Image (cartoon, rainbow, N blue to C red):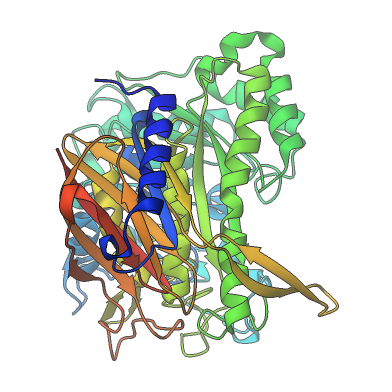
Length: 553
């Protein structure tokens, strides 16, 4: 029976009044926080593609991270690192985006097919970068991380997707290629064997069966490394790329190169220009790609920060919520039916490279508890906007930026981000529901460019919830580095009959997993007692990501 929201709030008010009048013996300790899960206010289904990933030829992502070669002493499936495949498969990944990123808009897909010993070598897009790159990286003069050998290309990437159960998502080169090359790549991937010269070439190289690639990005970051276009110029290019594409029986889900963070003008001007030839142009776009990274302040290292820098980066990551709301509103000015959804296909915390990693492994670090909380903050945000966001891809899958895996030669470790993805898996495919968090704020100091101290407050508990049958999954982040949050949890007029907890936390806010100690930071399961009448009070640990699995009657 659907419960009207006004009745639900009335009942909560009466319940709260009763609690105030109840004797102190009823509650051993007063909760300082409250979570209201409104199961009769669905947001929408959580698209499993929110749990997707990203592979770019950048630093140690592909070479050594994913591709070790068939003759390697490292266990592999046809050259692809076995440990990575086995662990990624457990997460049931949605899609994997490839080959970039900025690398995509310089990439010739034809370089990466056919016999490997005959594939050309190219200079990698990132070879001369100085952005957050240590001096030692700039001095590297050889190796596959800087000089692309094309050992890993389209066929190897599709094999990675098949091994892990993910769908492929290709990013087409718009900056340095034209429509003809895009259509040929589409033909190579999707045309039935024997139909064309390219599909026959695919059958000879790797697979008689077509790859049926549905997701295609039309360029990448076209406002910057993808061509330095204006929104109007890119809209014209987009129309040209997507007009009259052959489908070969596969529904194409085309994704436009959306804004850099809060650039609302890029979104507004693109959609205005795109629809000059009619609103039907919106039917040729599945998603609008938003990119946002929270960048490290202070020393910029992944594992060196004080408590103020801890809070500062968590607060920066929380900017994602506002970006989704703002761009969605602007998109709705033109696309009133919201036919086009948001795809956040680059997100994460971006730090400097760890000093103990090889120079060529650009932006390589294992991540810490702080990164894990950033993963939780973002995944919860996407789920709270399940009606708007249909895909999200942290950058990158392995070794670089906000990665889930960290490798070096035969060494392999799961990062804290991996464990958060594992904890959040039950949300995928469930129905996201409105959830209200009330909690004391945390206080800290931010510093401006002149190192002037700015007193700042940040929320004390936040998360998301979903329902699947009689199971409610609640995930939450407690950013407070020292204090637990004892919270009363209510689910409308439903009664909680059982509860389980899984927690990722540490007394050390810089905790991380290393090759020497790969299990220094892993989730733990906790027993949870449900009180009389289904009342649940749960204490969220300091500096934690928590999943509560609630069974209701």
